[in-house]
Image 1: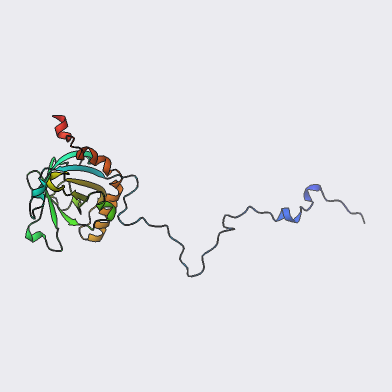
Image 2: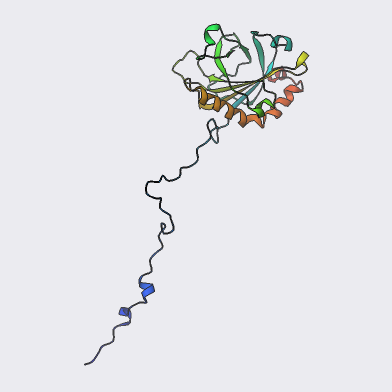
Length: 231
């Protein structure tokens, strides 16, 4: 019986070649154990600023003497000195601000400890005191507070942005001028979440803390403010 030879194209390929497949992307991936939860991405710390959005910063110089500033219940006057990071176009940068104790009806646990007033001494925002971090206190800040900053205070439906107030008391006998720093972030103020607002305030303050000495240098050196320099 005569055997015919198979064509070359029908010749069986080596076993290793016949079973060679493209490697799977899951070949070396460990599957989670039954009942276990896969790890989550780490969350941003509470109050941490959103990347790419820098808060607005306004610096005010105190116009009140150190003697008056030490009296309890006195209204403190501040004049705008510079705008290191200007406010957005929908917010107003007041040339003069007043800070004082609120009326008795606003001082319970649901209200505020301090308040800001506009140039006509109209209510601008209430402020809640925030525990002062050590590194913020080392920069000369004596009071740290948080509030909301709105384009229209009369519009109750409008949600204001988180506002941070850092106040530095003047030195004895005016040896060092007092100042007030306003930091306005993108994050909206949460009226019913006091702890969240406090964390946001600390986060905003820490973000600008590195640049604070450079902003304060002209003020502490007695240089004229923006409005004085323009005259």
